[in-house]
Image (cartoon, rainbow, N blue to C red; front, side):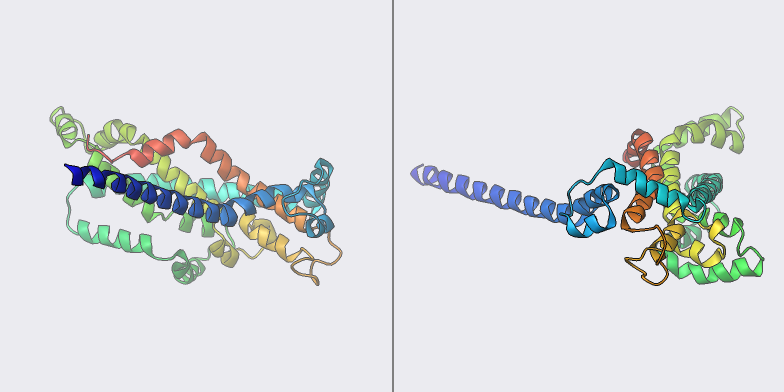
Length: 304
């Protein structure tokens, strides 16, 4: 009895030391995340409030003046007769167009893989997984050759068609239908005379709204942020999406390219403002779809 009582304070101290060590590790990790991820975002938000010289001479996280934001906006809007608005429009057309095709193909494909049995199904699933984990850059060369063979280089279809190929979305839908759609419900509908198309459109699709929203979000974000393929297949500046346009702005900024950027109004504050503008559509979509995203991420966690 005495021995047990003597061990209790030592165990309590050991637990306290373990909690302190865990808390210290968490604080260190959060500090690293703050330094490498949060502080650059804060700097980016504050950069348009300063002039180019103030960015170099003032403290990095200091606030400049609201008037500098208006000045940076005027310079950015006048760059090549407002080409940034053309880039934004192009990004919207490419992203939304490919999103529509993605939903029209990924949802039925995932449903078919999950709820039908046919020869070659496992091979298709394996291929989907392999393509999903492949780096997107590894497919750029064969895509370029294929698009060139069909004469699509330099057209909107050279962006929309490759962007609509989204194996990750197919796999998400496959996982959802495999785990969350009761097969008894489908069998009961078949007994009542429902066709396979009616099963998909009237039963499966309404129940799959969370995962549809999840696929739509990931597809839109991936399409909006894609740089490499549009950079290769679009020859004209007025066809660029915003991500490729940012690269052109970067090369027109004297801080990064003193020769090409000489005499232009594009400085570091304008470049920072253009990056914020490019991020805003994705941020808005995220804010308005948070509930659907959470539902989609939890979909399939339990079998219905």
